[in-house]
Image (cartoon, rainbow, N blue to C red; front, side, top):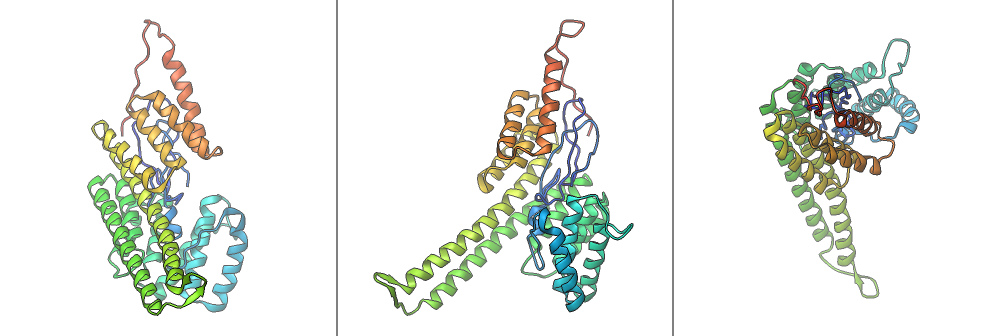
Length: 353
């Protein structure tokens, strides 16, 4: 959840970031940890969610199991000292930092320990895309956007068959947070192209492998041949790939929507189109409905914003970001409906970006 300023009513509403990966996420999704940017902005969300599940050593554990996972990975890292073990431990520690502000081992935070593990990984494998990307996300969470962009740039320059889409997406997040909208847009578009290319290549490889294995059909059940079974397996693999690809594309479109909204009123319509694409590709998402609502507020469409916040909460009732925004929107709307001393409704004021 990486924070970016948004144009909203002057009534204080919090802005949440997403290097979260909440994918992602973050203010911005980097393919999706909450922070308050200013009292004059909404809490917007995105993702770095895809980041945590992409590349070697990716970890996608829930909060409840992170402690056990970290303990097990620490033992594995001590015993094997392999790059994969160190990277997995670093990823788990980074996730642990995101879900808690607690510290481990005195003054050593989970994030600091995660950084150490990623650095150890890079000492062994200087061209490890995932380690560079995870370090970039750590820098984003600390507000060190310049260093985050440098680390993401390192990752984009590595010749690799995996992780480059995420690297470009994170570079886009850092660029957006630094106000370099053109670089951010280019990076997001590159990420989308890489995701699509990788999906097409992997699908073709699955299909070719299935054809090679099923050259000679044999009967495995009455009326069912080995070719039928292979075809079903290929379909299932394609469905899994499609789900991951859809999630990644949806996250990037969410980032593009945030970017377009940041550019100003003339881009609000395009921002809404990007958010709708994110929903169409990745399915219903509380995060995206929240961001659509913020765009409606920026465009002074408060009733539509109310509907979108409620849509977000219908999907995720405990989504604090949408809860907070909805309460503050309704309080603001109530005050705007009351006549002023001159008998007029107060105007909606945009905050400076």
